[in-house]
Length: 302
Image 1: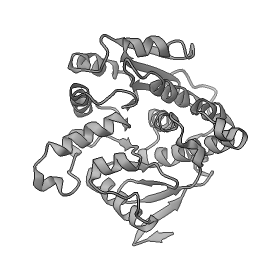
Image 2: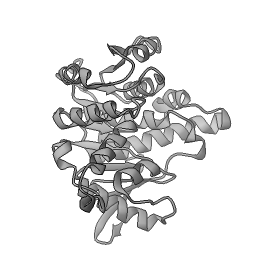
Image 3: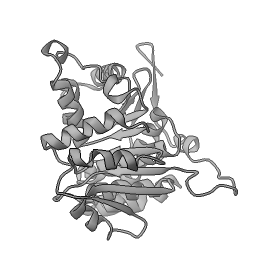
Image 4: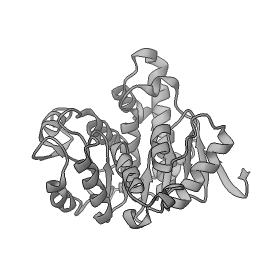
């Protein structure tokens, strides 16, 4: 389909064949990536755990989670598959920056943002990390607020439109995963009441300006790299429960870590996350939780 001379794609299950190919019997550990998840604080521990578990369910070989000590102590009990790296203190801060950058060595992608909080020192540390990290990143939740703060720090003239954050992201492959409000604080554009056509225009313009891939989470997900546009229609109203955005970020990170380019990874992740949510919610309705979505990922992929 063509949309204002821009290719528009509806995401279908055929996307899975692009990202999950038959494995050679000669492969080894790390051939399918090592993902670093940075998240959690003294109040929130579930977010990075959901991201990591969803990442494992979608094929990445190894996941390491870094966060403050209390969160990591809790996460370590979720599953023996999870490797945790505790940081001293209750909140991510500048003192952790060197450790985090060291941790990225040998990693093939990073997911950052879930449960980190929005203290000024935390947001500043996130921005410094994003400026200096060299591997592909999934920017989610509180990390989106860090990007928005970078925009707010620019001149009021530039603030009228989306600021060019290419210097911050260093043109590294990234996926930004906002919901409607996070998209507003990032772009300055309120699209909650906009029709689908208008949303498509605004999301594509934002992705083009930011020189990145945006996966807008909504009843119909919109994915754009500034050139192409895709719509994902899997998912359901029961996925308003907390944690389903974390699972999506984890799947995006898993696919990036395996070497899938961002636009394809974002499309596949949106489809898998929504399809797994559909499978779980069809059985559980109001009892649906994010952990149920994770358990349904193998069936969604199958």
